[in-house]
Length: 306
Image (cartoon, rainbow, N blue to C red; front, top):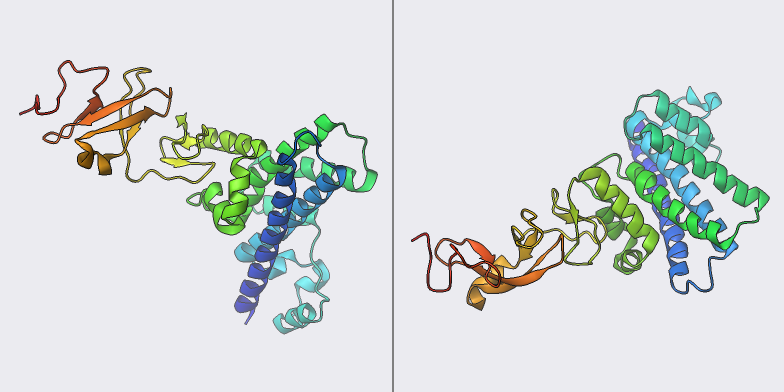
């Protein structure tokens, strides 16, 4: 009985966390519509509040999923019988630990989902959110501008990590596309703080980061073959070395359609941006930029490996 209750409560908290996350992102990306107007104080206040509520709900959901519902309850309700806890929940009398207590619990239980830096980011954001809500500080337009970056950084690097339950196989861009919807995701791709956060994230996980052929932003992981901004994955295009910047496996071209185009198709280097016509030999299938280097290379009607 308690296992099913844990599942229902965990999913309810998780779904509500997504609602508040979506609300925060919808608000903050609206500031990108007209930068000359600047960010309104009320909008940032509501955005920070929604993000903080989303974090608290996500944290509760994560703890229930990994440690059970009793782990989020106050001490007076912790040792109650299962049916009594469910009765309190149904009568809206269940009481949970504070956010600080939940954060401390997670840290003490040696859960590796968050790093020390993540905990510092959470504490700093929580303090700043409380200052904005309770004391209404006199912030300049530049402060509000910086805060937009902080909010998105907080969401991308910490909040979504908890919502994903630490699953590194799910990329943040994939998560956002699935749970926020295509329209809001498209606004995010044009939102500079989001691109900055994704650029930071991809560089944490990849040694080589190049331009994405789909969205054009420099957030494409060459190791993972996925764009952290738009979620484009390269499953079909081939890569060859660039004869301009000398980068290995950086020139991308359409291998699927090149055969129907007389084995010649345009390619572009994801590192330096130089393009050229790529010829792929129909006999040995080796490819190169036919406009630049033809010495000791296959040519139309002539395979040097035959």
